[in-house]
Image 1 (cartoon, rainbow, N blue to C red):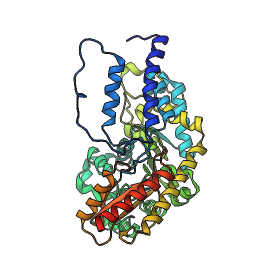
Image 2 (image 1 turned 90 degrees about the vertical axis):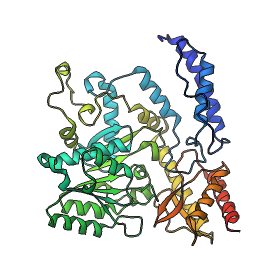
Image 3 (image 1 turned 180 degrees about the horizontal axis):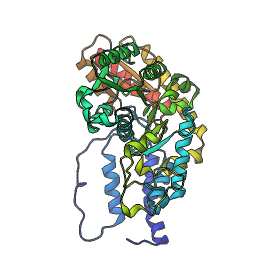
Image 4 (image 1 turned 30 degrees about the vertical axis):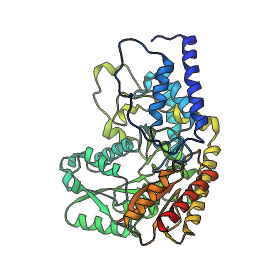
Length: 460
């Protein structure tokens, strides 16, 4: 197990060869592959095995999947996985620094802190804003709910049944999961209807809050979405921010999908009002194209995280450690044992430059607008409004769910494009999301031709 430099170089050379073959094959790889679990669940043996044999198994196991790393994955909200991010992660894993408490690795904590301050400035949060890198939006959401609970309910948190949290009926299910884990009963979450079946209605939210206050309940948290998973729309964030301010409530924006479009001129305009949020959750593994497992929670006042997650007596064995002006992330979130997550974002941003990410996001907006125009020209389809971000939703006009399911199955059966479905307005609706950094005009054009051919097949 104790490999020296030469042995490590030999090991990495073999792995690099397999990675090269994988990456070079993505252009022609099927959008999804089927198969069984095969021999992949065999337990480890007492004796060592050859690395090439194990690499065969590992890449074979990875191949039985939807090709989320490829250019033809238009289902859900893909990110693609920038290779340079994986290199940063490799460095992080090899040096194996503990970054829950800053004293043990102040250099890497400073690197991570710098990233968070840059992110806060991207959203025009005030000086002093901060946060932490998480494993994803779900973990960020949980820490936010706990912080908002502590800030607004405090000693009354023992009676969570009388508190109220407001979110759109289009909000991601991770929000309700976070509230449940944080101890809130289902009745504490009030779903606010949308004005157009997509965006939350601020007037309906205001009416619900006033109604609940009148009955002695405690509204304290209002959540808006910057890019819903269902249809990719952005809630009226400025109106929601004003409502939260007038009602003295915590305002959170779930920007896990759409947040990094803030880098573009169109995204900055469409995300107006997000700068007024008390907290913002982001998923760099979506609109920053990084590998899965990378999330962010930004907060206007980091003290709110410390008040909810900090421990006045963390244990005598930690008394030698002092933060020295850097954040102790173990006191800002739910994790004490915590890996370093900064290099996976820091390396690609510095190596490629922020401009490369901005250009890629602009390209995705262009491709989604083009896809919308092409599909809107199909008489058999109901396409709705132009996309806010990079998701286009469509369904067969005046057709039953079964017909739309048949259309989806026919498209995905080609294995040259993978899209998904959701339910909007009570009907099965297909969705095409363009977000992989490897998806370009030729891939979208092929997907559109596949969709149009499938429409002809199921309607003829």
